[in-house]
Image 1: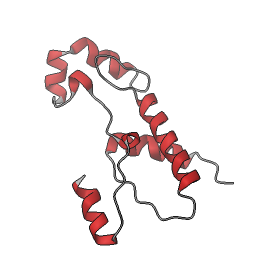
Image 2: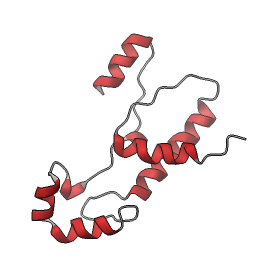
Image 3: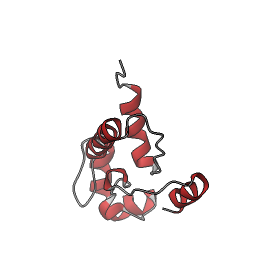
Length: 108
């Protein structure tokens, strides 16, 4: 939120918060290093490693779910924000699926 506030201040625009751009939820793995996660939850880490796109459970959000949120955000922006300059401030876990959608999107 600090980054968005700074941009807002510099550009003189208001910040609109949306849950569609919240960071990927890592559930029980949140805040753990890779080593800590492997030690505490070896089965979960291994199952997630094998299929990160679809894996969910234990409070962990799938990449498919994040991509779906990104698609809803983009759809809203394209419909309601057409012709406007929009700055989206988010996290790396959201940027990756957002780029995937944008780079394969037909703007025709």
